[in-house]
Length: 469
Ligand SMILES: *Cc1c(COP(=O)(O)O)cnc(C)c1O
Image (cartoon, rainbow, N blue to C red; front, side, top):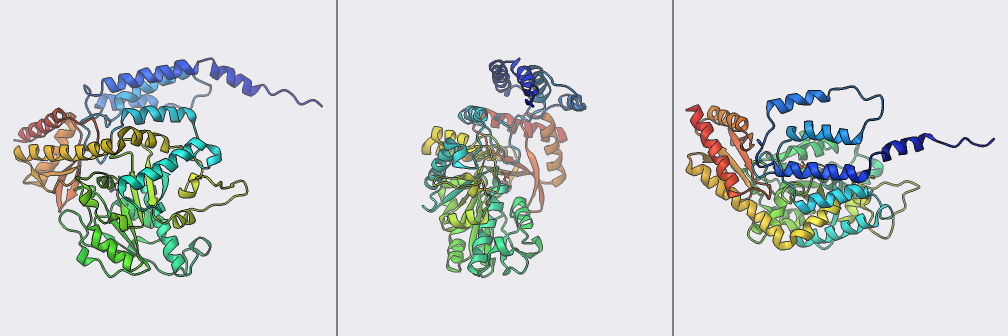
């Protein structure tokens, strides 16, 4: 019997192609340009009305196909006003970078390519750009020649990869194949880190089965830096996790001595450098990261300090074999090539080719541009701290990088000011606890921030305090 000709997909194709791709992309382009154009006029945080309107999205899944153009319209009319204007000049919350035009534009092209960067054979261009970026990272951060880079969604995942590589290597050194034999009965590894370690480091340790109760926490100083003298003796079964850039103060752990000690003891050092590792790329801030080259693995984000779009972090590891060994996978259809196969260095298989916009960004900035960006953010933070101080606010941290910890005489006042500044929405800043006090945390992380932005934001702080009286 002759098989029936399949017609269903053809029907779908006709329906999809009824709206031209070109007109959809132009519409998206137009809306995006409009979004950027009005960014400076709008409040940084969406208003209650805009958030309320999101209820219109609470609808059942459509029964039948819709119209792509009108879906884009809905997304823009409801979505754009309900975004946080974090790509503008006055968003200082968390540590959230903006997005450089070249990064955004290349990411559009990358989206269109829709490449899977698991294997070289799936995308030669993605594999090539990963190799190039890996090489550029060595140069930028001054890391060893043996460096391997895995392109992951962010520092959270990068840290999991780095700690997995550490476990693979440290267990391996004790004659234990962790992949095959697992965690039960494995030689016990020690984990040493500062009590100001980022929550994502703690989560990575929990996920990997280290057990958070087993972490040997070391006291940190008033800036959140690990106190080197309090670090217990290290040995070949120890994983030491240090930090380049404390989320509140921006402070850097003292790397030189600790990394040296770790090296002599055959311990493994992982550095969480989500936003702070970029200090290594700049002669004026490089002293903050002195000694990092002696560590074994580093996690860093491009989507923060470097201002690429989200979903861009790197695990950097001086031990290529440990990284790919820890993340190894096999399957009859997975044939590794002589070229770079990205999935060897990441926990995922299918993966968007995020090295595309990273490459474009690094290529655009060059060494000089990266330095201007990193030092520019630092300078702006120093300026804003001085402005706030001159208006009577206290700055609790040494502004060594891009973070400012702001307070006043009294926790309740700080909390009230924070609330009023957030409501005013000239800028957006978040709250935190630092040195046992309620504080306002300011992060200068976007390339767009101007002196006017800072002045307007400081004025909003002053207005809030006057309101309290
Ligand atoms: C942001 C941050 C992380 C987590 O990185 P993600 O990219 O959000 O996963 C880890 N450590 C520090 C110090 C950070 O600032």
